[in-house]
Length: 128
Image 1 (cartoon, rainbow, N blue to C red):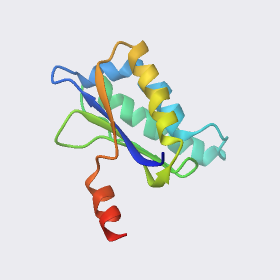
Image 2: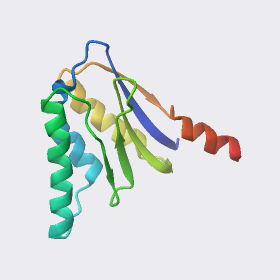
Image 3: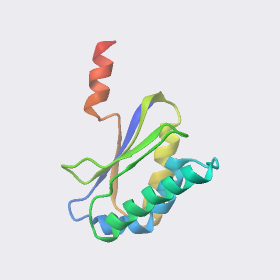
């Protein structure tokens, strides 16, 4: 089945600082494995460091978009949620969701998982 997004809903007592144990692995999945030119690699490293700075200060991370993988890592402003999204439906979003879920479970971070719950997705689907 093709999906647009995978959603990780965290409990009310969730603290953003608890993501520090898992964020490096999650970020690596989103950014992809392909080597970038040094300038791009530096930009990606800066984005990672900025996200980690927010997490270490127990604040919501900024998120990240990777041109290489066409994946976005989003953190909605109004809730404790992490979204991994693509601009078009794709079969491997389930695989990516499973990989991230494994990481979160291994780090003992409680969450609920769901797919395709973004408002934009509903708008796009209604136009077809």
